[in-house]
Every structure is written in structure tokens, then in C-alpha cells.
Amino acid sequence: MGTLEERVSPVLSVAPRIPKYDSRHLLIYDGTRVLLERTGEVHPAHLFPGLLLSEDPGIVICENALQMLAHLNYGVCSRRPGWQFRTSFVKRTKWRQIKGNRPVTQGHTLVSWFGWRTFWSNGTTAHTHYHYPVDPIVLANCAIHRLIPHEVDSDARLAALLAWGMDMREWCRENDLKVSTSAGSLAIQLLTDPRFYPESRRKVPRATNDRARQHLFGNHYELHTEPRIFQNGYYLDMKSAHHYCASKVALPNANTLNARGKFREPLGESEDQPFTRSEPIRVASGCAAYRQLTTRAYGLLQVRIDPLRPHERFTLPYLKKPGIRIAWIYTNELELVRELGGQILGIEAAWVSFERDDGIRKYAEWAMAENRAMSSERKKWCKPTLLAAYGMLAHRPTAPTIGYHQSDKGIRQPVPVPGGGVLEMNIHQAQKETESRICNVIHRGMIEAEVRVRVIRMARELAAQGTEVLALYADSVIVNSDLPLTFLPEPWDIKTELTQLEFFNAVSFHSKEMTKLPGIPDRLDTDRISHYKMMAALAGSGRTPLRQSL
Image (cartoon, rainbow, N blue to C red; front, side, top):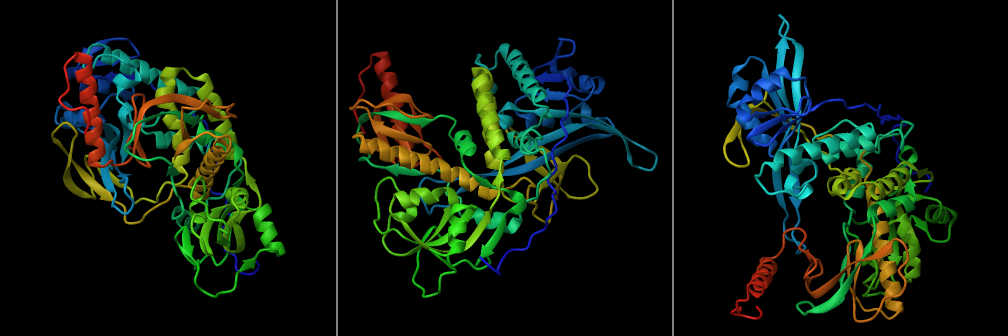
């Protein structure tokens, strides 16, 4: 695309991580007792501060680490000189089901470490004795009684926490990872693992990530049946969808990923914006540069497209409406665009590389092998951790907010603790947002695009065979079970049968076997689910329900 090209730094700043063997021992805390892995001894909770002092710095396995820290902070620990802790504040966004409604942002406080430090005479730190808490609710987003089934608040809870902690640490040792407090921290280590990235690579420019982040479309949903009616179906699932697609898609190499064309002032930002101007096309179809970008490049394109034959079913969003439009297309979508009859008139801007990245492919193949080899118990917590790597590719820049027990700077303020109480600390708010070095939003977008492409193709094949497709649901296809299914190609499989299936909208449905209410569901949907559960309970007890339906 000639003269207008982004100039970026050639510095290879993302170095492969140096593997470290994590030999730290475990301390298990369940709120009433403490178990030492080193000796196998169980002690009452009031001896916990002394054990923290006498034991070498280790990993504390517990639920609700912030509440544990609050108990320690207002007890013996804070009265001993040098007591210190560090927390970090993260925000998570939950989106509503109806487009246009504002999302809800929730804040969480994570405990990074706690313990004591000693000082030299000049005031500098001489020695630290810090323990690192790991919470299954934070790391795996799941309570311990769901990871390892047992009765809640029973004596078995301590043993369950120990078993989970040992399994988690063993998996980290097998892969030369440092045990971390969150899945994101483990994912960052994996994305700099020398098994996948043996050579240093360049950080993707933040301007490129910011532009691509606006065109992450997330999961793809289509509803092709009437809502609020009961029917039976099959839930066809793409096994290990994100890993499988990441292993198949051709991704751009970060070292040579550059912006070309009108990248500073694109013609439009929305995915299917109608084109009403008379500006000349930057790179028209048919020229050598166009053929090069559509056949040899990998990345994100802004194009002018004519749907020619608009589709309503099993199609890409920018091919549903007639007329020439401005569309943002990943290069791995081009073949499907041609299959659906779309014609690309020209390219306005491109964020591409002519070299492939093999690191994500190697990681995805390794992750699929891990999923096949690991036990069902390990998979409950490890599977989300492996998927977190794709989420970290599009992690937003943040201005870190850190809390310390004692600090010369920051603002002293109380922080609410889940379960009751507050924890006072000095809060430091960074003035400048920073972006993770491994952030590569185009990689994330192309993996999402590959999932969407494969789901649409599967739906079109099933419909051509005479199968009634009820919905396209993220990485799955839901079909009517009245007719038998033909042979399903890899990696597709029937995950479950759905009886008394009722769709509420394109993203929400309920059946006896499965319920999906992603994001923040409508109140009517949650009321209906509660009603179904009440009806099932009444039927099980032999009582006659007052109403048969809403």
C-alpha cells in the first residue's frame, strides 16, 4: 500500500521467560484450622500468626483471602513490627443481554502477599518474610466444594483445599511455572514460555491494539426458531473450540505487523457502516497490492464490500444488508465472504504481516494435549486457566491500583471485605495506563473470527442436509432432534440432548439438561427459571402445582 505505512520500533522487547521450579510448601487455612503440608500437623486458627512467622515463606491455600487478611491484620500480626501486605484492585465488566444497555462494572480486591520485613539502620529493607495466598475462587472462579465435592463447612474442607493446592502446584511444577494468584498471571507466563516462543519478539504497538480492540465482536449468536415454545434438540459442540481454532488459523507475526493505508483516519468505525461518500478506493480489487493483501497477508483489513446477495441466515453481520458498506474483516474470513457471494471492492487500511506466528499454534496444540491427558478433577480448574491465555491477548490497558498496609505515599482509606468488615490500607493509583507486553488484540480477534467462520459453515452444511438448525450459539450449533443426524466431522460432537428446550432470546435458553443465561439476564428470564425449578420440586414431592405454566 505504498507510501503511507506505520513506522514502529524494531526492538524485540518480549523475551522468553526463564523457567523456575516452584518449591514453596503449602499452608492450608479453612477459617478454623491450619494444616502444615511440611509436617502434616493441624493447628487451631488462633496459632496461625505464629505459624506464619516460624514457617518459611510459602503458599497459603484458602477461600476468601481478603477476609483472612482482615483477621490477621486486626490480630497479633499487625502488632509485630514490620507487618506489611499488598493488595491489587481489578475491575470486571458484565454485559447486559440487550444491546445498547450499559454494562455493570464490578470491583474486586485481590491479596498479592502478606508478612513481615526487617530494616537496616538507614531504613531500607533488609529481609522479607512474605507468604502468598492462592484462592480457588479467584484462580478458578469456583468454590472448593465444587472443585472437590464435599459437604460445605465440613471437616473435609481442609483436606479438599490441601488436595487442590497440591494438584495446582504439581501442574505448575510440571510446566516450570511459578504459582500465581490468578489465571491471568499463569497465562502471561505461558505466553512467554520458551516452548512456544523461544526467541524474543516485538511488543505490538498500542495504537494497533487500540484500533483492533474496537472490532472484537465476541461470541456469535443467531436464533432461527420461535422463542417461548417448547421443543427438543441436540447441542452440537465444537470440542476445545478456541484451542482448535487457534491451532488452525494463520496469525500475523508481531515482529513485522505494521499498519498500512488510511490507518490513522479510517473511513468508519462500525462493522457494517453504509458507504455514502465518493472517495477513491485506496487499493482497488484486481491490482497487485490487493492480491498480495488478500492472499499473502495475515491480520485485520478495512474494506469496501458489496454483499451482492444479502443473506438472513448463517452469514456474517456485514453481509446481511444490501448496498456497499464499510466492513472490518480479518483475513481468515475472506474465503467465507467469497462463499457467501460478497464482493470486496477494495481495501482502505490494513494491519497485517506477511509472516506467520507459530507460538499461539504451538500453545494451542499443547493445551489440547493437556486437556486430553489430565484427570477430570484437574480439568475443572485447569481448563479455564488454559483458556485465559486468549483473554490476556486482548487485555485492556490499566492504571494499577495497589494497596499497602504501611506506605509513605497513597491515600489511607477503608476497603470493604466480603463477609463483613473493612480493611484499612494506603491506596496508590497510577497516573498512567500501561499495557501488557504480550497483548496482541489482532490474534484474539482472528481466533474469535475463526470460531465464527467454522460455526457458520457447520450450520450451512447441516441445513443443506435437511437438518433444522434452531440456533447458532457461540461455538456451538443447536439443532432439532426430530430428524437423525448424519456423520459429524471433527471436532464436532453431540454434547447433550436438550429436552423441553425453550429459547428466551438469541443468547438465553432453558432445558432440563442445560440452562444458559450469559451476562446480566432479563428479570423475566430469571423468574421463568425459578418457576421451572419450583414446578420440578413440586412434581418430585407429589404435590399438585397451582399453575401449569406462566
